[in-house]
Length: 455
Image 1 (tube, one colour):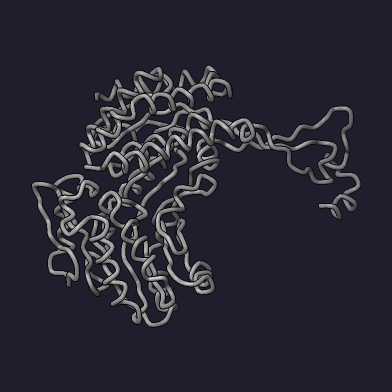
Image 2 (cartoon, one colour):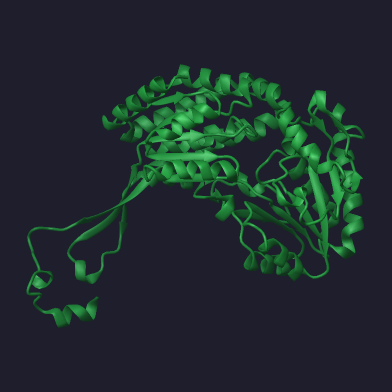
């Protein structure tokens, strides 16, 4: 798309926002319902497109792409009147008889840039927040999932006027043209490296950003863990979407006493879930493209493979693979894997695992399998964007919880009320009556000694 067309669409949205139409709560609820109905009416188109791009089964596509978005819309429709209501807050004695409140107002024109791994959900879920808060939105889907991007454009174009919500497709050149423009908020999901590019571009206009990035999310399996349950939940969290999940367990730190049992349980769970040959399973997705395939295969080559390792490039297939004790300075332990490769390291004391996690960048998620007492110690002594005890991934499904990263794994959060707040400015308002005008704040500051005592 040409730069002048992009600029024109953005200016049209800013003009539409200036009319105040999007601030009306009835309008916002109506738009949320229209989005909900459009998704429901195009369910098959969406799941077919996701299958074409990533080979996700209908069930996985619905659960991870559509279902989460519909649940988010339902929650916003139910809670929006309460969130939108001005919030009264206490007023200090020295400000009486004034009254104080917080008013949520939309930031304005938003840009939402989505990745390819969950190409529908990670564009539509932030959009729910933009609509709910009263913003306009420019949506930029990933070019690496073209069928899903095409369906998204069709749905949005048929549902909303372009001066309110519009889709702009294209590659990195289009991204750069968008980032050159001035928005009121940029919401980006992607890699940490690209997050830095987005933040640098936003800084030129002092545009606020929400960055949902990634990193190497550790999974600690302690000596007292339920190994069977741990294996089942780790394999599920690692292999859904063929490991192409920003919060997937990136590597395992397991207590040395349970390592062999855990490895055997992981092998058994992979076979139980996908059969002896996962390439023939209807439930096992594929890698997004050849470039990603080559990168992930590079992690396998030369590694001490204890399970899996088979690849079929023409089919973009990589078998769930376990690598034993890779060097901590090797690429598979330095870079986010974003694929079905699971390195496994050992420790003897829980403190060693904690120190290992803390020696690296702050992860997007942290998972711990073991008893609650040690789990609390791990939570207290580490930092991550989110996480689970005795489970993986499930924290992302609770719209009462914020989802976001910390440090290298991102900034800002969304889901549920956090999505509404992400696209809003919390405006402080003090209302002061005119029937009284206390003299102590004016020169020459009468009663200063008395005022000083109450400050």
